[in-house]
Length: 317
Length: 297
Image 1 (cartoon, rainbow over the protein chains, first blue to last red):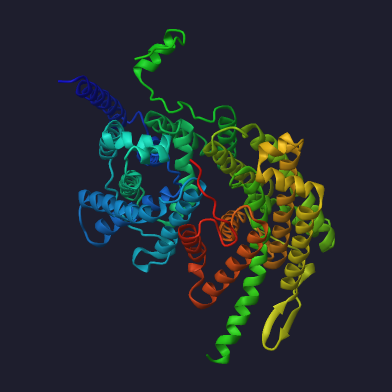
Image 2: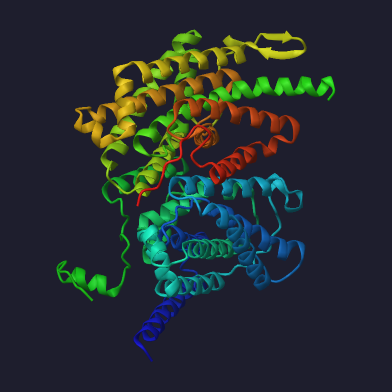
């Protein structure tokens, strides 16, 4: 058994322990219904943030239309269960794949753009997806698709999240992931080295979009409703903020960003009028003093904590 | 083509022109700020909202006439714009692009939610002092507000063109947007020029805000979100960083939106704006007025 597999098994073990601890607290009702809801929301946001990090962090493409793919997953999943009467696994698969297909179709032409132009194009596409949904009567139009059964459970959300995190981690360490990182560092140089940049950019975009679709299915089957107002560009900005807060290109950073921001907005939910104000000031202050995010593009690991303990001595591995 | 169709077409053109001139006013600020800082100032739509609120306070609470209110709103928003630049954007001059963008989004949230706290989320109505007198011209309906919008826009655009092309500050602005480092070496105070650009752009957006308040008679703290994004579309359409481009882009966008809502469906209005955006980005990303820039390795 090589060290990578050992490390993976160790991480899986940590996930299982974490799961057992949270699940135990849920069962014994130490964690109430309000925080259970927010826990599921954290899982969903972690999936969204890490999948956007694949596009924005690893591949260096600037997408801010993630809410559109989230919406497609939410609606396609809901159509499967509500309209066609299938089970949750079918909804998850269809939601994931259809968001991936749309991501592929959208990514193929738009990824020729770069920088700010790509950002604005993806923002526009996200809005177009939402406006189209708004005009389809079959899925409830402006009033949203109601009556979705609550099929998402905490264990389901947790293990899907863990599976996606493992996938993204391994993607980054694979040849595909390295190609994406090369594109982020310097697209022209990567192209010269024989990397098919379009292929890898579209690949990362499609994968990111499909995971957003998975998150969408979990979302609509937890909150009973898929409503166009949940998928505006504000949602895309929210996801982007989580990624940048944690540090662009750091998966553990995205996870931390998602947890911190979901937690803050839940904790401030008693003061709705102050919530967004504090949130926005926090965002500005963080960017002013730490523009690279909490972790930069480093991963949080035991090694990092160990090196901190050693008084910040540089620890080359 | 029957006369009914022609009639509706002309009517939608008039509506589109007045809507488009407001987009153009906001787009000008976007394009100037982008031209100089390469920053998509997401908070720009909210400056427009701030301008509308200052205008509301002047007209409805202090009962000032239209012109002084417009000027006060423009001056007030110019100050707000400069403060934002000073506090939030200037320390970020050398930060990664995405960090500045997030800051801009943060400023935008801050203005929106600050205004919700200050003025409550309820929409406000402008005083009815500018009640519309409606003119009929050959069956077409034009109201006095549309005329006010058109005249104000034309005057403001002429003023801006004069400032940018004929004054020393305008020359400095063009120099900084062409090459900031070279401009600095030539002794231009870049910070002052950038502050001035924010002031000018914000003043124009505020004028747009007051005009919209007069036109639709209703303002609310989130009114800047959609027009902000659409004005950016207008700026990209005309070629970002190019001032006449923003004017033309705004007016084209307004007319297209009016035609789509008049002939297809008003719910597809917003989709039309974004569809234009995607098409222009795919086929002519430098915009209608832009020049092709060769990529340097």
